[in-house]
Image (cartoon, rainbow, N blue to C red):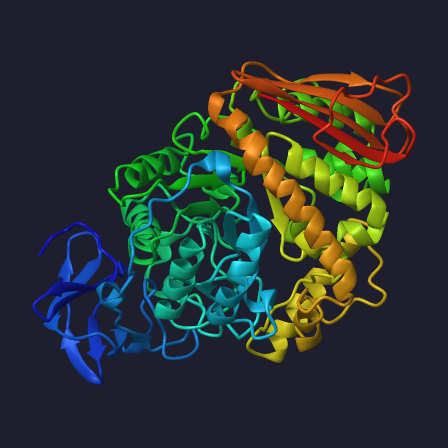
Amino acid sequence: MTASPTWGAQPLGDGLWRFAIWAPAARRVALLLDGREIAMEAAPGGSWQCRVPARAGMSYLFRIDGRDLPDPAARAQLGGVEGPSVTVDPGGFDWGAGWPGRPLEEAVILELHVGTFTPEGTFAAAAGRLPDLAALGITAVELMPVSQFAGRRGWGYDGVLIRAPHPAYGTPDEMRAFVAEAQRQGIMVLLDLVMNHFGPFGNFLPGYAPQFFTDRPTPWGDGIDFNRPEVQAFFREAALGWLREYRLDGFRFDAVHEIRDGQDQRFMRELAAAIHALDLGHPVHLICEDERNLPHLREAGFDAEWNDDWHNAMHVALTGETQGYYSRFARDPFGDLARALARGQVDEGQPHPEEARGAEAAHLPWTAFVNANQTHDQIGNRALGERLITLIGDAPARVLHAALLCMPFLPMLFMGEEEGSEAPFLFFCDPPDEAGRAAVRKGRGAELTRIGYDLAGMPDPTGVEAMEVSRPDPPRDPERAGAWRDLTRELLDLRARRIVPLLKSGKTGIGEVTRHGARAFAVRWPFETGEIRMLLSLGAPATGAAALAEPDFRLGDPMRDAFGLEVEITG
């Protein structure tokens, strides 16, 4: 029996399967396969394994010191997170035609939550929306986490079974069918994967593998000991499994600054190398969220990082809100916007009254920055879940929408943004009992109050209403939504024809930004084969600016209107 740790139920061929779990605190472990108990053999280091005849669709549990528990690496569950797990053979799905993938420069990302993206909240229903997204020019969807969590509803960031698609969304094969349909439409599928913590409900690992965790918590739960090879194997096998078994085009890794291995994130760098070593027949794109603003992962195998600096500076400039993490951008938000337009990030290690943050990243390609005007985080972490358009109005939101899609950074929209949705997106979850619900209400209220939000009118985050009002489809005003879709389609057609070729030609320098009054900018981004010029007013006309010679797109008049934009593309 090998001492190398492996996890989960794996078909080996000829009807033989391997079942494995790391349970270093256990005295005895057995496999319950369709009700039959099979002894498992202990290997050095605390791993337990057995090889037995099995087939897809069989229920199983691990009996650990007399307690029957689900597989933490299960590919599917019969019901809730408490078990039983189900054997899944991913080789049985017919993918049909191959998929060559798409280069990162072509990415226009739509972040979506499967449970609220459609009225049905399933992979199958979401697949039905894909042709419309493709017709608009969306080339990638980023699924908020689908790893199974306790209850029926939730954002997905409290998953406890990392490899099992949440059953309320559909079966593993229904998720594969969603991916296959997206790729038939020319749309890449990225998965938001959470490896920095487990959810508070339904995580049984501490009982039989306390060594999985550290005594240093994350903001969302117990810290995970990424120094241990068994822990590294768990997450590495999960990530590689998602890619191999679901033909994904890549990941967005959540809050990698909380993946602490004490070795400058050696685990993440080695994971990127392992992913890029796979022969999947298409490119795999790796995006991370890292609040430290460091370029080191993007210099070591990662393609891009969520760039909250753009959003935060823009949000403060246009809304005047300075609570919580917005306070860092309160001194000079329009100056911060100018820096973000020129360099990508705002914070690059320069002195700051609060604390120096980040390191220089302007040497990276523009596609190393994923810019968004709003995400699930910034909308959902408000008491009433308001979108930006609700806070600033339709006309300013249209100009910001156009600017986002015409800048050289990778643009990301949040579901419904492509049609100007005003539907809120609230935080919601489904704890297993009243004690859990009370704890969530108390914690959520304290967090929002601490950063200055009034809780009046906030729906119960544990109730059904919070999820139901968060659905952007169907639009409340179909005619208005149609006009927004027309705008998105026009902008993305321009981006595909004129901007993407420039991105592929290569960046030749940082952006050149000229301020025209307090709230307007003229920007030039140079490339090997041409340039993008933008004149942008965000609250006051561009005083003394010269009109662009031959704009390829115009929305309002930035030299006369408080909110306006002109874009000229050469090359």
